[in-house]
Amino acid sequence: KAGVTQTPRYLIKTRGQQVTLSCSPISGHRSVSWYQQTPGQGLQFLFEYFSETQRNKGNFPGRFSGRQFSNSRSEMNVSTLELGDSALYLCASSLVIAGGEQFFGPGTRLTVL
Amino acid sequence: GQQVMQIPQYQHVQEGEDFTTYCNSSTTLSNIQWYKQRPGGHPVFLIQLVKSGEVKKQKRLTFQFGEAKKNSSLHITATQTTDVGTYFCAGSTGNQFYFGTGTSLTVIP
Image 1 (cartoon, rainbow over the protein chains, first blue to last red):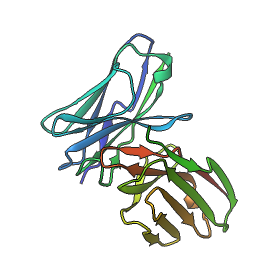
Image 2: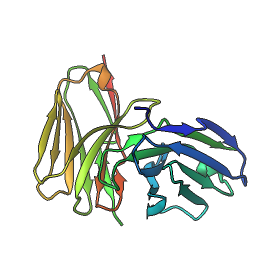
Image 3: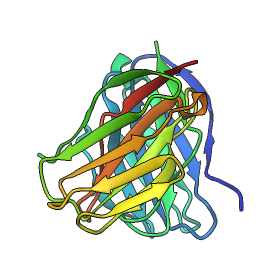
């Protein structure tokens, strides 16, 4: 079974721009969660999607949004980028919501200049 | 708000020594998971604990879930250089996972 894939792997943007990250879950997994990982803050939960609906949301500003498609693939969008948005963005797929083993993708390393 | 604290933040051990990381939640958890992230890698699931007082072992790793389901620990016996990485706990309240801050383990050969 193929693992979780994320594209792109690396991204460099400038302040004020917007970015879209993509995540393809493991086949059969309907839950996709997004996390932001920074050296100082650890793993911070952004949101979780299940069956195309956002089920849970972390404490991030509205500049961070996401969606899930009928094939369970998910995208995350960050608008009006700030320097502090530089981080590793990880997505994880799971069979169930907030209760099962999460399979993480390799992440997208976003650098905001 | 919900918080999951993990200590210590960093730990350096000589190869062969034991290692323990502790995870504490401000509220009762429905379950707790442990993940390992190697340097430059992504978190990889190790185990899930669900029952109060549960203890599970994986070779040299021992995982415990507290009686009150608010704390957990991971103990590694006789560390090896392959144990290097950051260990995260992730507590679930049923609505979402709250990751601990992680413990970075360095094993000195």
